[in-house]
Length: 276
Image (cartoon, rainbow, N blue to C red):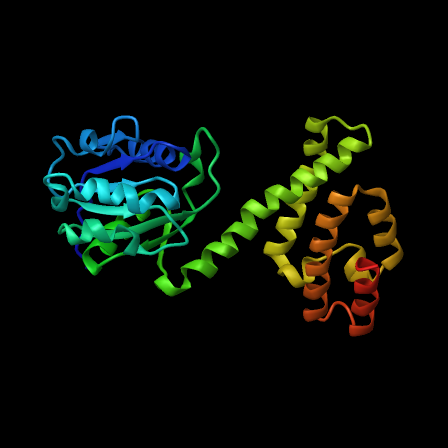
């Protein structure tokens, strides 16, 4: 029988969406964060009085991680704690200054899109990439499991492509839905109603992807080879909207052809229309 892993006190630096979600999730398990803080109070205020061995989560944007790590590393006693960041694109090397100060460092990236409020409700069932030395990884895995997440390891060299996949699946989708809403608004539909109309379509599409895979779930004019439909779409849009639509359909065409849903000749016809 595996020995239970002790989860140390957790402190959070940076109370944006991730920091708030993590703090609320910890509270729901009965482990209130040892301390929370951010740039306004500064690293010194967060460290003051913490028990040695506290796990400090640096929940700040990627380009702030190295400077913030350096600020913590310069403080007396900083090396007595462990530190992890929440970046998906970078490994623990961003926290090198803290490692030089004697601290254990790692990563704790939650593969989830968090809302401004009540983000803790999204953590359960989400996947979580953990990184660091073996002992710290065990702690992070235990923490992820306590919060209802699915921990996994990711090689540092794989992080850029992993995070790019996450950005496409989440951030890019939001941008495309924003464009779809704007197109509906041009027909006279109110913005809120436009989102309400698109929501069942998006949910149905996602359910199809989960059920049969993206290759089979793909529908629409590209996979049907309906070049004339694409001509009508492009003609109805502004130049900027058409440029974005064209970029999306180029990728859709490549995906449809690769999956065997579109013949080479059909794909050639579609591309000719898109690049006229």
